[in-house]
Length: 381
Image (tube, rainbow, N blue to C red):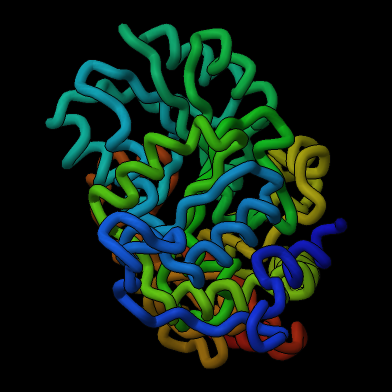
């Protein structure tokens, strides 16, 4: 089946008892057993829940993996996956990471005993150099496009270096979504999502997921999913799966609007840099064109001037809400240094290019002329 068909039908079989086209939401926390130890596949909703299993089947199908474990947030998924490692294991992580991922790695997992090396940039050579610095390489963590600088990593090339060192290659595919990019088909072993973003798509449900190429690879994560218990409730999983059904349609409009926005912003004064993988002058444009089927809905810009001018631009936004998160149908404007990436020390942020003048735009699915007019008036004053 093609992507759109999988999005609608995977994990959504009609109810066997009633014939209901949309499966009922299973709210029960516990399940009655005929005699102790004999049940119908369900014991306790932290361990198994039919509604959560429907979502997991859907997401596994969308990423073309064999198995999926759903979580209560993207960071819960990240925490659980990284918790399968042991002290002394080494991680190679990209140079431009989501602030919450960086915080987990630096504030929890490094003190716990993991060795973490960040790449110098998004190049294949940078990943090879980083691997060589590890005493016991175990896991490679990629974001592409990255958050918030929208760098593009060649998944196949980076994964090849990781596999030479017997590493598990993980890709955070939140920004692209499976509608635009399938890392497992490009050589990755596992995919992580904040389903809060494009998969849910409506800024009304928090969630996360880990999808693996094989069921065996997911087993350590599946064990900790139950043992740690950071699982989503049935209403959250139902809403996430409902959002996933329109993911392909929404991503088409997100990509169209973001491309038009990026091209229009090039004509405006007051912007020193426009970052969008769909622009031919983006350093990762050729890679993105090869490994993605669309350039995404995220556009980052650098405002000419200091933090005060950048704040004024934000304050003049009308349709773009100044808010954290991304990927919803409505447009959002984020100031990474004071919002999503505030946990990264200033000197490290600025060395990576995350300055006080950087804004990250999540371009929604409103009419693009209205969105362009809103950003134009905010920047030109």
